[in-house]
Length: 69
Image 1: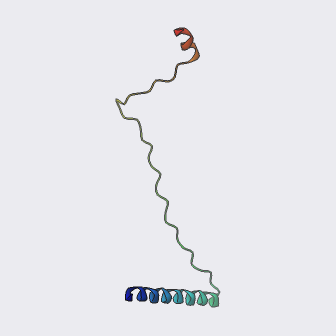
Image 2: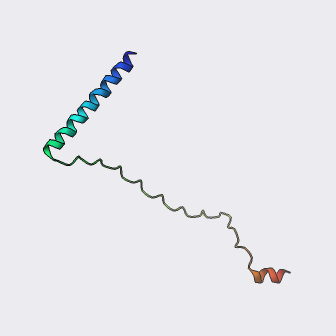
Image 3: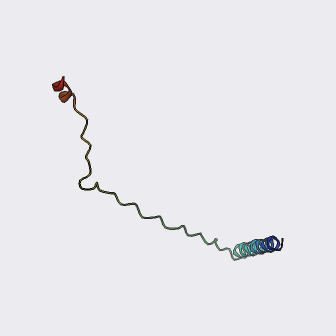
């Protein structure tokens, strides 16, 4: 119970300090500080097919199908 109480006190103090900061910025007529967005992760490199990997043959064309028939 003590942990919950201390956590609530901390949250109240944090909210109060945030409100004080915002009031101070309004009095100074300064824009709020924008939050920095984390950088985007680099794109994943395109993997090339491995050497010796089994290649899938293309589907037969209409001419090849006609020759087999």
